[in-house]
Length: 207
Image (cartoon, rainbow, N blue to C red; front, side, top):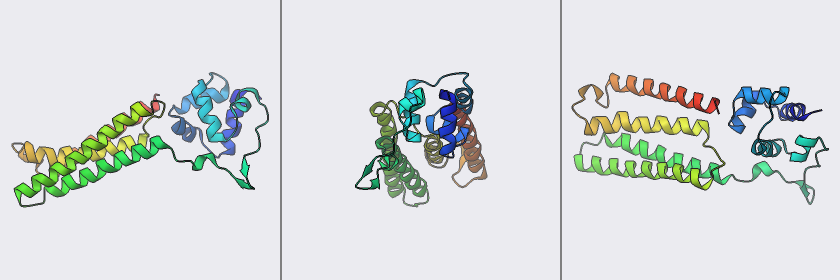
């Protein structure tokens, strides 16, 4: 049994499809297919990631030596998957700030008092800026951990809410068609969101 066959064997043991494994490793499904068929060999970092996903050693994937029994502590299995991932925690926290900021900004347009509306809008904008800075810092602190595709799509849609429903109606009022409650705003929001989602999906699929 060669490396590709062992990858396929372990993938099936975990009930992963090629698409699911590709998503977890941030590669394309074609890359996984080529690994399993022996047409190419994964990079060392991907082998290390797969060993963690499959709960086997890198020696087993590379050489075929028998995987060790899972570690136990007083008879209780220790599951590495249950350990918190700092990069994931950081990205979810940053996405949460952006989500709260988008909601606050959206609510601000329905406040009749101009001063209060602007203050609330600024609070929402500040939260979003902090969230964006958090995403940027995450990339520097955890260079080997790529931002989850689903989180990237979520953040994009949230920022579009701010642009289409908050910034344009508030600061570019001469675009009358982009009133916060207009059908044009809704259509623009949906079309831009779909376009951004397709672009993100393709970028992640090609890497």
